[in-house]
Image (tube, rainbow, N blue to C red; front, top):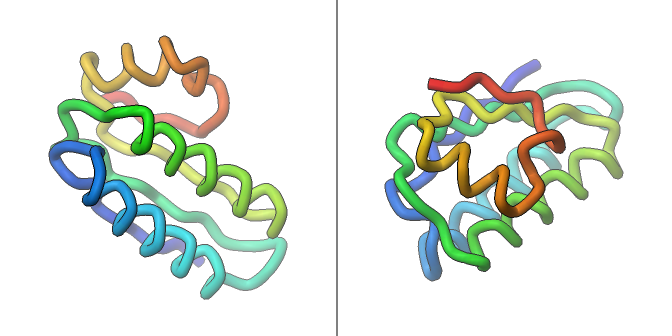
Length: 96
């Protein structure tokens, strides 16, 4: 089973708080040990530290529940932010 969630254009507060809550709710709705959450970043240009913290919280919840998270459509500028935050190797990623 797979759920898709589109990330906001700017993963900054307060949008990043809403995004984190929605992603965690979707993970909780998947069966433990199965399922994948796909986060669509094709429209996301930047993020702040709160946005990066949201990604860490999402990754942590998925690992606790034995689920996968894939980042889809990651554009070069956002990829660079992930790399600088050392999150580039923490997710399955489809660069856009």
